[in-house]
Length: 388
Image 1: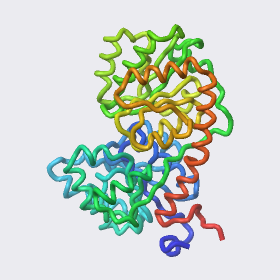
Image 2: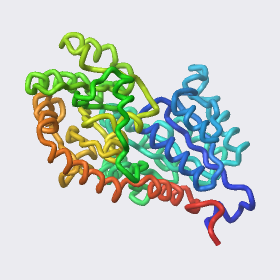
Image 3: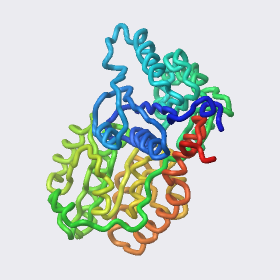
Image 4: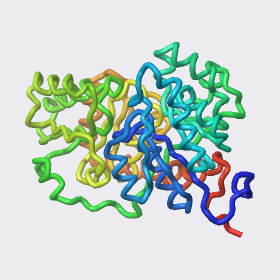
């Protein structure tokens, strides 16, 4: 039995999961799934969002019986929050007797690190999902590098990211760990529900491409829209693009759609928590990101037997290796349109991508393996109570 659990009798230990926010996003999905997984394993789980007190993921988490608290850093007074927030958060962690804390992104080390040190939380794990903030913001890189040891373990979502932390940020190698993002893999091919397409005004004869994610500059959705526009001149097959997500780039995307005359062919579905219900109604998944870590949305599409094409950035080439998906250069609408055309024209290719993609997810990205690994790093047994 671990040093944490040996001191506890009867009641399950408390794990606090600190989401970045409750909005729809890859890192947020990882955090929510971890919280839900910890609860399935018998732990008492509490959640809060560091940059948002509300959102669709909060409702999903609370529906599972997990209590959420309001500890949004940015809702505190700007002039004093650097001083007051650590004391508020430390008081919460002490009051709830947190045995372990799981936070996300390097900013948490700076904003909340003093709090968990004051509260003497036995184990803290920080998960980093992507590196673009470190590469584009020297101040962020320097601040995070100076605070790495506030966590007992730092996890990354792709093995190559460990080298960046060690070589560029000076992280001790024994502090770093790779934990693959995991998803629930349906046992059988999800049935296509015709009502889903009708719900969004989409015909059964249309070939539907889908993209899921926060609508921001990094996702480069305008390139996807441009590729879709080019695709429509290359095929006579009726086509449609579903964009699932929301964000600051939405007005620019809508302008691009209008300028290219695609209003009747691109459906903007907004942020949704029922993506697993929608994916089986689509024909292909497409990702146009300029940078990524290991995108949850892409793994979810593969798990749901949807053939995928994505830009060769971050951990995507490794995820889609050996024919598990198609990769194309970033910011290249012509290459993307040609890959999309292949998915329309080659049913046998789609079938191969589905089979190999599903094999990859089953082998490397099962959610239960991910939950077990996080519990191990948090110093807790894989299930509570710990088997005799």
